[in-house]
Structures are given as C-alpha cells and as structure tokens.
Length: 277
Image 1 (tube, rainbow, N blue to C red):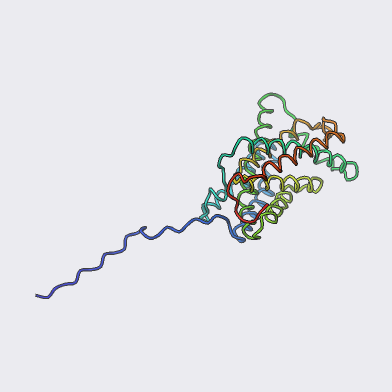
Image 2 (image 1 turned 45 degrees about the vertical axis):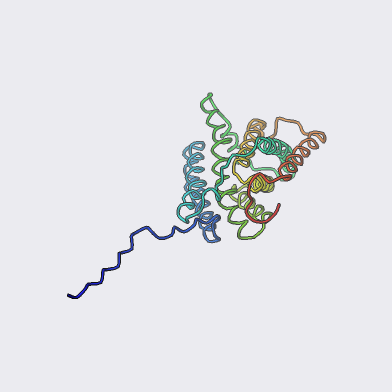
C-alpha cells in the first residue's frame, strides 16, 4: 500500500518575530507631524480660538499639538517610553528645574522689557493677552491657570521636547544641535517675532532639562512655572511686569540658572540618547 507523506503544517498567523519599536522618529516622520501640527493649529486652531479663545486654545493644544505626536508614536511603531518619556525623577532635579525656570523667567522678562522700548509689540498682541487674562469669577481664573500651567506645558513638551527633539538628536548625532533645532521650531510655532528670541532661549533650557533628565517631567514642570509666573507677574493692560528689575535681582536670577545647570549636569538623571551636553 502506497504511503502518503504528511502535509507540512500551515504556518500560524502572528507567530513570527515582533519587530522592535524604534526609539526615535525619522526625518520624514518628523517633517510630516511638525507640518501637520503647524497647519492644523494655524488654520483650524485659529478658527476655534476666534469662536472662543480659551476653549479654542484648549482644543488646539490637545488636538493639534499633542494629538499628532501621540498618534505618530502608534502609526510609526515608536517606543513611547523613549519618544515621550514620563519616568519619575529625583526631588533635587525637580527643585533644580524649578529654580532654574524662576531665574530664567526673571532674566527673560527684563530682556523683553528692554526690547519693548526699542521694538514695541503691536497693540493687537497685547489685546490678546489682556483678553486671555481677563476673568469674571473663580471658575474663569481656574480655567486660565489650568490652561497656562497645565494643558499648554504638557501638550507642547510632548511634541517639541518629546517627539521632535528625540528625532532631531538622532538625526544630527548631537544633543546640542538637536536641542537647538527643536527650540527653533518651538519658537517659530508661536508666530511672534517680538518674543522669538526669548521663546528660543526658553526652548533650549527646556530641551536641556528633557535630555539630561531622561524624562519630560522636568521640562513640563519648568514650562508650567514659567507660564504661571508670566501670568501672575504681568499687568494685562500694559504687558509690563509687576516685579521690579535691578542689577542685584538679575544677578541673583542668573545665579539660580547657573546653579540649576550645574546640579543637573553633575550627574545624569537618566539615559541620554545621543551626544553629550
């Protein structure tokens, strides 16, 4: 009797090796998400903010700033813990980031005061700030604080110091170059040439915190502190700070920034991606 060879078993679905998730987006992926976020925020976000400035800002930040970056992590099969790291950090690093943000805010505010005397900001931009800060009751004040010190820092850090900076550091094979590039994009997104330099410097500081700490917790905290100080220490009607600046206060503020920098630079808070800073 003729024997029949057994049929080879059919390969089961899903038993192959699972590809490893990538730790940073590629150049085209960064360009796609940055462009998508920019144009959505510029056009759809402008419409929403025209209808209701505060609620429109909330929707724009969540849907058009953080949203594309979070979706890209899934679309492009990226490692979320590497691209958007939210690991806890030590208390002393949190304090260093906070004190550095306070000092830097004081220095940048003084610089913007000087700039205002030679390159004044248009009235319509001041009106936007005044409208944002005007409130009738505690509920509106709470919404302002949640937006400025909560939603905005979290959403912007996810896109700029998380998604874009991780990819730019890898692309340029240099932490300083990647941090500066992401800070430049961050400043350009704000579409405010009167605050471009100050926003760029703030972006570099936030990028340094993210890279050295290995977590977005540090830049989120520093970003929130900066925004909170900008709101509470600014007179809406004039755009001028309520706190006096002097050589002594500027020296003390610069010392806070320097101390924060050296505390964070002394030892890495976590793994860094590429390059040394």
